[in-house]
Amino acid sequence: MNTLTDRYLAATLRSVPTQRRDEIASELRASIEDMIEDRTGSGQDTPTAEREVLTELGNPDELAARYADRRLQLIGPTYYLVWLRLLKLLLSFIPALVGTIVAVVKVAEGSGFGAIGPGLVVALHVAVHIGFWLTLTFAMIERSQPAMDLPDWTVDQLPDVPAHRDISLADTIASVVMLVVTIGYLPFQHYRSWVRDTDGDNIPILDPALWSFWLPALIVVLLGTLVFEIVKYRIGHWNWALFGTKALLNLAFSVPLVWLALSDRLLNPALGERLSWLADADNRNIIGVAIAVGTAAILVWDLIDTALKTRRQTA
Image (cartoon, rainbow, N blue to C red; front, side):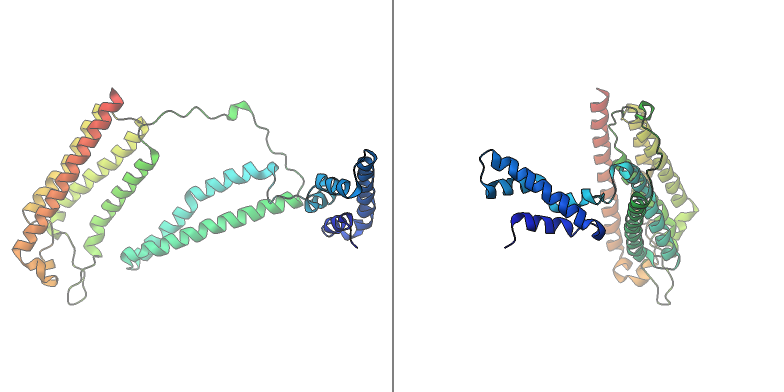
C-alpha cells in the first residue's frame, strides 16, 4: 500500500532530471522520516505527523522546481520590468501605425469606409504578434543567458510629479482624431462618395462649386481648431483667452455652414439626379434646416459647456 510519503516522493520525482532522481529520493525520504520522528517524539501519532510534515513541505511541483533549479515563471523579476516597458512602448504606436498604413492603402484601392475593418484587424494581429514574440524572446533569454549587467536604478530616474490637468489626454486625442477625419473626408468625398451616377462615376456629396472658396476656408478653420486643441492640452486648463479663441473658431465654422445649408448651397445639386427625393425643393429645404438647427444646437451647447468649465477652473 502506498503511503502519503510514497505518493509525495513520486509526485516530486516525476519533475526532476532522471539522473538525479535516486539521489533526491534518498535525501528527501530521509528528511521526511527525520521530521516525522521529531514530531512523534513529541507525542504526536505517526499518521498525523506524516500529514503535517508533507503539508509543511508544500506542493511537490514547487519542491521539484527547487531541486532542479527551474524557474516557475515565464519572465522572472530580473527582466520583467524591462520586458514590460518595452512591451508598452512597442504597443503604443506600432499596431496603430501598421493599421493606418493598411487602411490608407485600402482607401487608395477604392475600398472607402470598408478600409477601416482590415486596418483594425491588422493592428490587432500586429499587437498579438508583438506580445507573443517579445515574451518568447525574454523567456529564452531568461533561461539560456546568464544575468545581463542591467544598469542599477538611481534616484535620478524618478519622474517629475505629474501636474494636475483639467484637460485630459484622452479628450484631446478624441478631438484631434475627429478633426483629422473631418478634414480628410472633405476632399475624399469629392473623389469617393457613396453615390454614383448611371455611368458609375462618383457624385460628390457637397457642391463642387464650394471648392472655389468655402471648403478651403472651412478646412483652414478646422486646421486652426486642431492646433488649438494641442495648445489647449499643453496649457492644461481652461482660461478665458482659450474660451474666446474656441468661440471664434466655432463661429468661423458654424456660421458659414448654417448659411450654406439654409441657402441650399451645401449639397451637390447633382444628387437629385440619382436620389429622386432630393430633386424636390421642399425636401432639400428640410435637410438644410435640419443641418442648420443641428449645427446651431451643437454650437450653443459646446459654448455653454466650455464657459462653465472655464468659470470653474478660473475661480
